[in-house]
Amino acid sequence: MAENGSFASEYLAVAVEAAKSAGEIIRSGFYQTKNVEHKGQVDLVTETDKACEDHIFNYLKKHFPDHKLIGEETSAANGTAELTDDPTWIVDPLDGTTNFVHGFPFVCVSIGLTIGKVPTVGVVYNPIINEMFTGIRGQGAFLNGNPIKVSPQSELMKSLLATEVGTKRDKLTVGATTNRINSLLFKVRSLRMSGSCALNLCGIACGRIDLFYELGFGGPWDVAGGVVIVQEAGGVVFDPSGGDFDLMSQKVAASNTHLKNLFIDALKEAEETNP
Image (cartoon, rainbow, N blue to C red):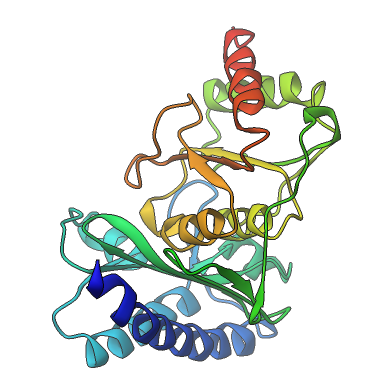
């Protein structure tokens, strides 16, 4: 599609600038006392989340007044907007809010652009360790301007797995989550929980981790930026059941192509062993 190619680099440049300036807000807030509110039992939101989203939306609106916008904080207030075929920016102003509150340096801004519902441009920026992940559909994925690729790992037993426990603390959900992890731990090398869905996807893209899945995350803003980056780094993003990935489904899995089917089988077995 001509629009994707010629305009995409302009879209990316604007998204990078928006992420950098929001990153400044995060960086300055990171070392200060935080004013924290609870969205749910363990889900937190800070003044920084809100300030970053306002900043990014204003920046994007100024450059692309006709584009649609979906953001985590506005969706928390108004409900998630429906995804249409129009160019739509999907923004998580601060992924890893709990990390932010605790001063754990895995936080990021995630900005994704869908065109015709297809993730086309992705930017994920961690301002604390200064890592900028970018991707344009059909044009590769980069970390601080250098090309990145998924790991070549083909053995499950030598793979590093990332997941998250999610925000629900009812007995049923926690039981299912820990049973799933228990089953998977016998099949992989080790497990990481970084506290950021977007950075987990970027970890797949640059080969730091080999497998990632998450069930029941917040919404499309957690994955819209990272999906493009994984795909452009040669990785695959799919539904944990093995079906096609749906941006609006709140379920995601990612790996390289060698591990995909092995991972799907392991996830299925983990569900079957779940009482």
